[in-house]
Image (tube, rainbow, N blue to C red):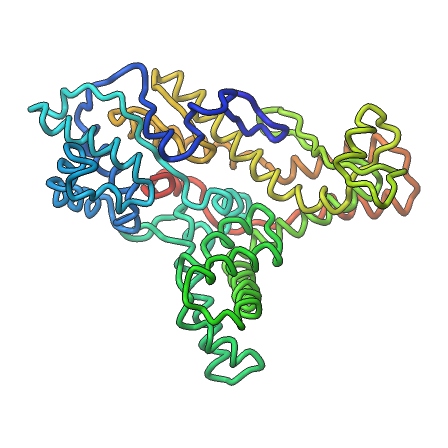
Length: 437
């Protein structure tokens, strides 16, 4: 594995590795096998259903029931993948689903699934993990509920559906009150669904701009029978409403992002790159620069390559430093959580792999990994992450530099204006079954 400047890890192997596409992941098994034991077969079937997306919003019991009901189709897929009923092909991740069908069928036919030795990796995925970190940083009760940090009832919350409901209410308001957006609201209303705005919700936390969100929604509307003459206005309208509703739902995330933006602009205006230290003491430095002497007609990549060894000719790119900091900081937190989970799983003798916020282990060890995942997320966010960041900025950019009185006062005000926190109790995560599921 290799890590980037934020601490996110990536396999060195370019092709046959577990962060590749669906058909590549489907080929990979753990070298060491373990008997399924008491709960392994349960998690194997739940994992199979998770891959299909058919019952992703259902309780674990309903997913298990669905797997049992579909057992004839599962076995048919395992035995006759190309000439049978091809149920596995209905999945959003068909090749991994086929691999899971073969594993479930083999366990069923072993006579005693609890003794069946499985090499198959079961995944536990974060529920919109970037927003989970924001909700934890801000101790945001409403946000925590929407991304399954706080559990209410037997069913998982779905932030994408929550935002769709809020956007629908905004559209209905524009229609009922015949606002200036009445016409485009009427056109968009039949086409509003989870899939249309899901990508924009998912990437907002990682710094997607309004323009980028508009293009994402435009692409989704292009797959439907949306009137082509209205697609530009319609995608812009839905992007605006999506951003507005997300901001209302995740108040603390908006406040934290705004503070991140102010700090990064203040730092990069002084010509320096934004840097910080993760809770694992990894120094992160954003590698976004531009040249002081760059000709206006020369592309950034060419000039940065020519001047890469001449630091005195480079200054921080304010625009890229600002846009990159919020998502990069959150990525550094999810990498920290992944590494802590990896370390403590290793201490407990588990086999472990990860794809950022998707953690893999043997079916029999899912309960142990789930416990470790929650414990380490809580331990991470019980650290004073934002106050520590504020103190680091003060030491790095104020006390170590030569500033006049006005610069000193402005930077100090920006760095110390840390957003407040809500009333969410992090320990509730221990009792939330769908935090990673």
